[in-house]
Image (tube, rainbow, N blue to C red; front, side, top):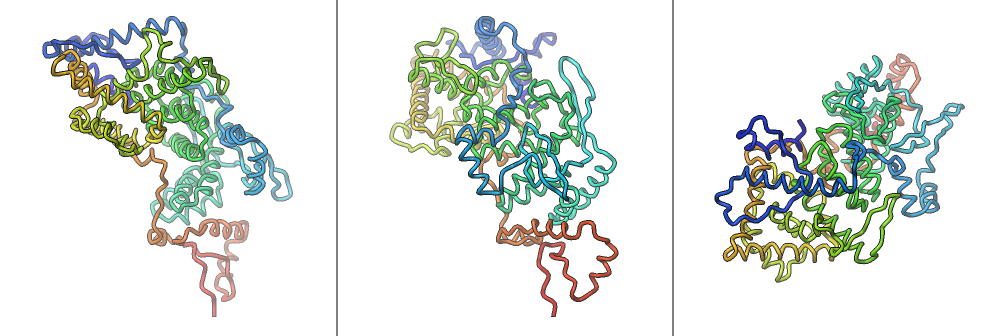
Length: 558
């Protein structure tokens, strides 16, 4: 069972005790609980039943009118036209600008290169564009289809005997924690997946992001090169089990590639890669669910995010998660802003979405301000973190809001929710920086304060906040962190670098020099030569074959 699905299980735990045969209910949107003056007499089970009933009525009314037959897998189908960073940069800056930048850098990327007097053709792939200096793919990696059921196809990677031998050698070298030894493997086997991932991490921690990106793209190229002919990522129906060890590198490489694309500003490509990660394994082992909303907002795919929360078949409780509860409100705010400025149909990237102003909403639809109030009542602890991280300049109005007990005393009430809130703030704080968004946030927060203030004289209003507090306690367990396997740092834009003294412990220069590039160059000079002859020549005092195994230049001989 996926971690997201466990939220739904917690939500219906008390209902199962009352009726073991009753079907578990799930949520598809964030409903507004009806205020109840007799809150003390209403059990949490009755409250949850009422929330589900309201949600189903809204969903049946809207979905039946707009989407009669919904394909549950289509929402995660990847649009291959927007996968590559180069294509998106050309759409943003123009082909001439990108071509000039490539000519001024490492040269244009070509599908063919000249090597050893012959012409080597590099296969064009969906995820990355091959570089002109990459060798021919001979990795021993392949993929097989192992099952097909319920409209889904299940695949897994397999290793040849020669690849398994290299993998065993890699595991031995990894135990020594010597990146120079891993560099030698990459030199001899340019498409060994785990070695490329490890070396990419080393370069990233050294601050050499371009070299790290090149190694990561070469890794993705080899992984895609091995895809089965039936492995079609555009359908959203291909599955890989993360628990199968040979499958894990694809997940890890895609997640790191997604981070790199986001840093380059290729938000649409980042969203497509995130969709691919979510479609491969419904258990979401790397936590792509907690950043897909951010990428959709940055790519301005507001309509897609609303559809995703409504149609994602694996988990109907998405709108109760901190990231989705606030992102849905923010998405609706942007849609309303487009409707108030254009008043027409907005078209972008081949898809059309209707931009509606608040007065154009139907009775079933809720305004962005209403959705924001619900999010602030469900997760009041988020507001203080947004103000600190964005950051938002605290004027007298903000000071008054944050001093109110509803926000001042707000806590996450458990390690699970606290962890998810930290992930959301770390990943999505940038979307709260525009002045118009901050003004809207202040308006919504003040409205929640007004609701709490009227609680003393109007118990019906107080019950609304208390109802959301009950939902929060039921959904998020307070005893353990269900997402402790997800590191908050993995959702940050910052790139940690190792201090010089730690780099020197690995035999690497502390000034950021490209030490392992010199190791690779040494290996290319020695490649194909007789090993016994090299051993005998090494005894000669004038023999110098380059750098030693620790990446340092040998001292001059007397």
